[in-house]
Image (cartoon, rainbow, N blue to C red; front, side, top):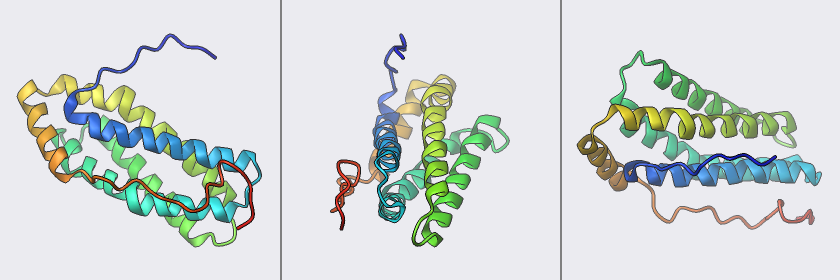
Length: 167
């Protein structure tokens, strides 16, 4: 399906988080690709836990500390994003406990992460950009830059999404 969706023009302040979102969508693709290739669910599960602990958990903390705080506590868009973070944390916890499988949790995690990223990119970030002045966005960007993890891309010895080789 081809859409005429134009590329999003993102404030420079939020670009590091949008790059993380790209990595998150790639994680969703890897989960789905591994599942499509009938890769053992435990191999995929271990990778998802690794990515969650090394990248996503810190990304969520960064958003909650630096981005969501510009919105009122009762803002419905903020509440939606926070609820999605909590659901993803819950699913990651279930995956951690699901030794030897967790296929249903893998699918749920990929679907929820995909939904969450698209919500932030298409709704929440534009909403925040419209609410804040250029100066406020610049201040937020400096804080994000100071806190943002650099060079934390996951190196994983089992590229299950490429081929289904036994470990």
